[in-house]
Length: 203
Image 1 (cartoon, rainbow, N blue to C red):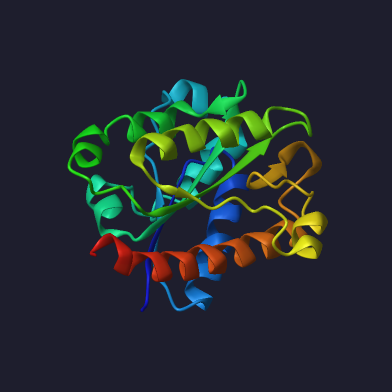
Image 2 (image 1 turned 90 degrees about the horizontal axis):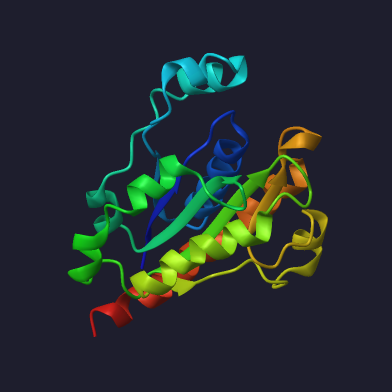
């Protein structure tokens, strides 16, 4: 069975976007049908324009579709990503997640694999707390959490060794080739698990 994967993310200056894109590529390599989707920007222009990198990234990704609830219903599995905001989820992504109550109540989110990814300015800037915050959403949805773990120790260790999910330190530059390799690995893993689990939801 070919799975359907929705990679939904928010990215201000591009680091989370790069990870999302690599995760989507990994899922596609595992024969999944993939939708790479961003959440809407809700920050005011005056805030965005104070950071040239923020404005540039918003402009260059304007053609990336904005996630909808229909995308979540369509998908068999989710890759959800956000930069850290004070150790938690960025408001732009949280606003979208907070609209899912109706489809959650209708059972459209239950039993679907869910993996998370993040980026922080500092190595100890809240990566794990942000990933756990994303997984709190998965608990309520009834999703199946797919952490990176150490399933492939060499790949995850080279990417920083975070067993909770993919994580980047933006203060050290763009995502490394090791992190992007781990994202592709995790995308493939998510797609295969989603394909295996999907028939059980219909049982």
